[in-house]
Image (cartoon, rainbow, N blue to C red; front, side, top):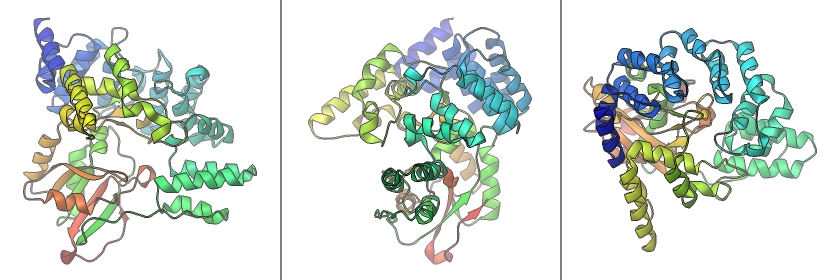
Length: 445
């Protein structure tokens, strides 16, 4: 109890790593047990983490511990993960059950049964809230059944959660219903997000719609050869170190860059919807952040995630750093400056985002918790490697990379986001100096 209490104090003041170490010694409740187990997993003690979690999930309401234990089971025996949710206690657990069956056991019928059971319980009055699984269920049911009713209902809730193929299907549906103008408007917005996307371009040509022109960003350096690798869906059961080593064997002279969010997914350090709730402080500060402006930032009706992201910041950075960052941000606004809040709370919390790719559309994805350690392990094996955070709006940022690599050159080479987004499934991009290699084509790994 004393060790756990000391851990909570350190957690409050922002000493997260030290707090996690203490929680691993004295697990306590669902929150502290979860973070203690995460510490053990990151330090290659998954066996001890599993032992702690198995004891905790025998109690009620240890939702975080249960989902983390499922992640560890998925790496060894997915059937054990399925067994954890055979008696789901809520809709989210029914989604987890369906996801385990669909993505890890190839049991489409069993997955559909679980998702349909959850769908019957949806509260449609709160369907746009982030912790309501309505849109997640509609996505999965449409994915399996291709029933246009699911697509239309999903579009009413959250078109911003569509991937390229789903956007294309929705545009076709509007066109078929005679709503050509809406189809064109939707295409315009989609092409703004996914510029020159081949799926959307084909749909526009097929329906004889006008393909809008949006200026595509160019890389900030001219001497870079980039090669995005289609790695498929990388999941919790994918070992990231093994993946990078395999790519290095195929391309020993390339700098290997990996999306930070995908590394987090493979490491399993995720904050799952249905396992946590925002505290009073997160609910108080949430409405004052840019995340509360959903429809002003995103097109259509992006679900409000402000309170949940604030909760993630509090957990990843600590209460005091978040409060201090809020004060600093307010001062920055007076001088017309932005971004001060994120400088205070750090890169792990700054990277927190929601994902569009199922099954990871049901969680918040922070930055990798051990980026420095993971990178150094690969660099010590003479693998030129960098963890990057890239998007089409803000460009590229190197989170960690091997010593001797030019961070600015890497950021310039990736500044136009050559990996693309979502359905591109290319979280790994290889880089070369142009004078060392001829231009290479996109290929699958």
